[in-house]
Amino acid sequence: MKKISAMFLLMALFVSPLHAETYKLDTKGAHAFIQFKIKHLGYSWLLGRFNRFDGEFSYDEKNPSAARIEVNIDTTSIDSNHAERDKHLKGDEFLDVKKFPEAKFVSTSFKELGNGKAKLSGTFSLHGVTRNIDIEVEHIGHGDDPWGGYRRGFAGTTVLTLADYNINYNLGPASKQVELFLSIEGIRQ
Amino acid sequence: MSWKNNADGWGWTSIAIHWITAFAIIALFVLGLWMVDLTYYDDWYRKAPYIHKSTGVLLLLLTLFRLVWYYSNQRPELLDSYSDIEKKAAKWVHGLMYLLMFAVMLSGYFISTPDGRGIDVFGWFELPAVVLDIENQEDLAGDIHFVLSLILISMVVLHTAAAMKHHWIDKDPTLKRMLGIRS
Image (cartoon, rainbow over all chains, first blue to last red; front, side, top):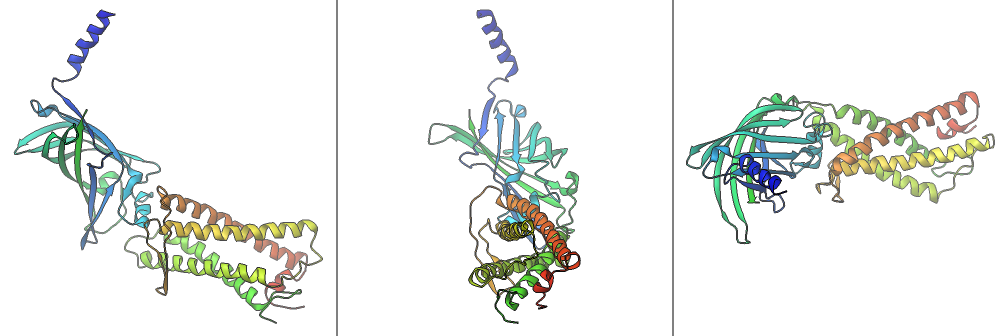
């Protein structure tokens, strides 16, 4: 018994990088946001968001390049503040959420660029297509919260081309790409 | 012919409502099927749903009035030549069609209103939204609206076939009564 415990302890030491801290996205308190914007006809920005998602990240200040993150998005929770439009976006001409109820980002690398900036790379799965994307990340802050926890937050932006994800509905020449803005705050576990 | 019903036949009010409804249901069905595949830059992309929704609301109001009219008026007797099964079937099918009409119209209303936006009816007035706070209500209502519309239009086909049968095979005045022809 002692032997087995010692083995597990040893394994645990090898498996988990030293000092790596795991953070759970604070979706419960809604301190995490996945928002998108796309041009409407080229005349204005249309804004929307996904209301339901969850995820975890790990971050170690001494070894930031080991940071990783995984986020699962419930595509049925898309919300552009207009029910008829949301219905259209969830339908088979756009996200086809009956077939693809989940989108997912899994990081593969994290490179700090200094000044709190970083480049996060990973695979993004949406509408049945998985592609490598880069997210420009800014480390916003970290520290104790007033309620006994410890939090860390980042903001990220990336641009997706709809056709890359097999979304080919013609919204016009100015609306072929959608910008994502990710604001995530994690609570250290 | 009177504007009210009597024991022998329908008054012109009932007849007019019947044929307006028939035309509206078929037009709404075709328009609905067609409009959901319109592309964003199509001229009709905004116009078609606007007409569909406006007409649907007006049909809802007309059907509410129709019920009041139906129950506050004398109803023509079913023809003696009908068999017992025909009499029963007619009652059930008509009841089911009314139920389906309301269900289709209400489910359509619930597609457009979960965000609190009412339905603008041809710019004349707005039918206010009743917000139920059901998760993904617009999708659920949309699925129901679609399936029930298919069932309703099947009932319309059945109803039409029955009218034809009465007219051509049984050679009774069922269809003539709904056309206001007294024999």
